[in-house]
Image (cartoon, rainbow, N blue to C red; front, side, top):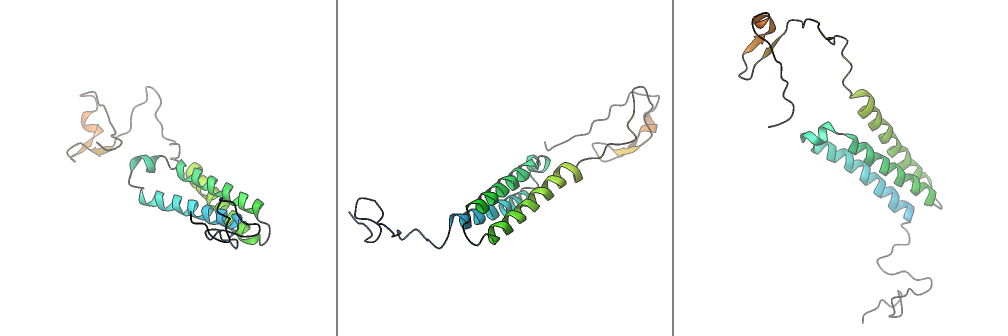
Length: 159
């Protein structure tokens, strides 16, 4: 059975004060958490931009806000675990916190469809408008007013 000489005595136990070759004592848990936090945050941005044409991603952008919240939690854990040189963890926490606030603001405030002030009430007459039909020919409501019942259907999605 092969064993690293400074890593253990063949029993799988570490020698006191020694580290196995795959362990880098200069890279702390806090640093690893910071890197993971940035990877999660930037991965969320990249995934959203690359998958924007997919309807479910475009119509439900909450997933990237959840990823920003996870990245912020990882960064906060990195700050808590840092023993020395805390500024990188604070920097990552600020970066991911900014992404979380900006993403939440954009998703829940800026990107919402505003309420229309011209909403019709029951029994009101619809204003005249012109829209293309299924073949692309422009059709006006005035052409049908009083002649036939008019049903307007807005297709949403991809079929």
